[in-house]
Image 1 (tube, rainbow, N blue to C red):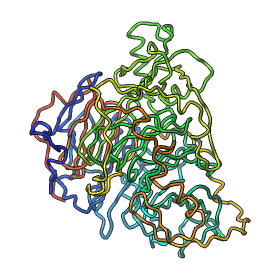
Image 2 (cartoon, rainbow, N blue to C red; image 1 turned 120 degrees about the vertical axis):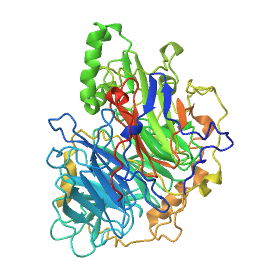
Image 3 (cartoon, rainbow, N blue to C red; image 1 turned 135 degrees about the horizontal axis):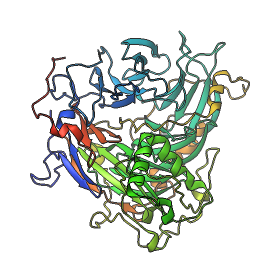
Image 4 (cartoon, rainbow, N blue to C red; image 1 turned 180 degrees about the horizontal axis):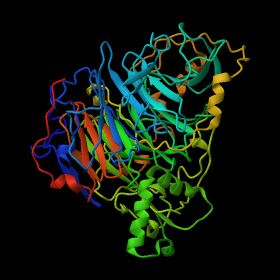
Length: 614
């Protein structure tokens, strides 16, 4: 059943219209109707009771110049196509691979970008019954099935990702709240694994698999209460951000297995998370209808964004519109043509270039800079929101002459090199302690809180408990895939750890977890959980560094907020020439960036082949 008026709360016909283009400061984004991907019959999918539609991309670097490949799941089906983007219309009659599963549904997937070639790709697929499959959709092969007998975890797979820089390690999270590290070279065993405690901290624990020979899983993480909805690796692969149904963002040092910092949602569970290109900021979204910006260095909330009318299902940074500018005019000396050539060059190596330039903010160079981070969000309200995180939010203490709110698009490529940024603090924390209390300057925010100046100011709106009545899941989107840095080499040592610490005998069982948001099971006999129960009481966290009140942090307003689908949105991915969205009906849409419509706009507007019914 289509929910065609979800976004029209209190609005008229105009608010209920599906937008096919929108305008930002950099220009007009246009929906390319002939670049729409879906099931071959193009019939809207009946999404009742189904897992979120997800999308993964990979480039196989073939010689034809058309190396992009797209994978998406719709219900019990999984499709693998050549992705033609803004260049040519989609031909849905010719999937490279199509799979239909019985008894379970694909929930998420991820390509290994390191090993992808024109002849072979490694694709991990997680399922609603808890299994993880390794397939090669080019060769049409199934390599391995992990957790086949569901002896490791019986709950739905919520997120699966290759460990950055690794050809064999991958991480899987489940609705049980557990997360497992696997090696594709190892088997899972024919009996349920036995675990030994490796490390524990505030509301988390990590166990190694106890066996005579190395087997999967290498590590078991138990994080928070309720489902672990999504995780994301930092751009350098050293840190891991997790969001859970208990409303907490937890950021770990992945190699050291230590908690770096935490944040609590304003209300309800957190469903999605992403990192800024330089790893300095994390954005999370969820059942409080907000997007929350958290500083990795300061371990505190620095802003919230209000624009959605329902749960936020995906957040993602746009690396191509994120801008870092030196104020030194000599930095950009040269002709416009030289500058343009430089931007094109950066665009070809987008992940590394954006990250490397932004990472120079750690240097001692104190030249003034202008910074604008662009990120987006989509939600169950069927709306797409774009946000700019600008200097007036990042540095509220700086003189107004330093504050700039423009977005430098630079032909939708990555920003120029050599930029630095000034940070007032650099305090990091480990050993599971929340570091916000140790961060100076937390109470020195301006009494008049800055806002995004792209829209008229409106009163801060506090989300009510009505959110608990809103429909289903969300939280299924895959991030933008900027994991090009090498993994911390110490991770591999977990496969051969000597299990000598026997005083902490922890008999790990499949204990029941409370899936209602914000609650902690009172039946747990774990002293650690009993200890943290008082710390995670929502009534006690509101107004603290974990969860500041609405009036205590800047409130962002979206640059644009447009209804773009009939059903809830589940995907937002920023690519060089376009952005990609998907809704629960199974339609994957391509939105051309300003000036990037290209050849497709001049093509014959006749409909492409409808294909055959699945």
